[in-house]
Length: 116
Image 1: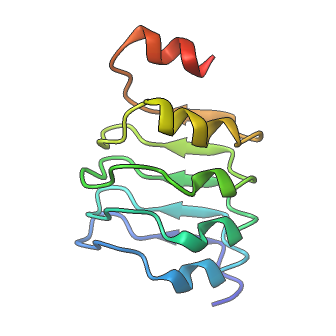
Image 2 (image 1 turned 120 degrees about the vertical axis):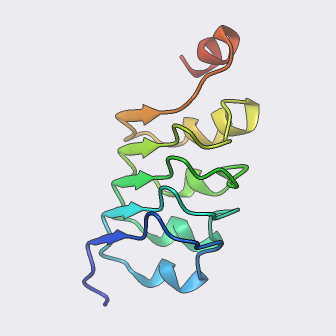
C-alpha cells in the first residue's frame, strides 16, 4: 500500500489513527470526516505529499497539534469540528505556506483578524 494516493475513512467509528499511517508516503488525499478521532498521529508530518485533509464533523478532535509539519497541505477542511480558531490553531496554520483553502468555524471577528 506504499503507492496509496487516496484514503477515505469517513463515516466510521474510528477513534484514533495508527502511527503506521505515516508510512503511506504517496498519500495525497486523506478523508477522516465524520469519524470519532480525538487527535492527529504524531507522524503526520512524514506525509510529505499530502495536499488535502478533510476533518469535517470530527466532533472529538480538540486540536490540530502537529499539523504544521504537513508542509505540502493545500486544503484543510475543519468545518463542523470542535477545533476552534484560537491562538494554538493559528500558530499551527501559520506554518502551512501552501495552504490555499481553509474551511473552519469562526466564533469571533478577532480570531479572523489574527488569521489574516
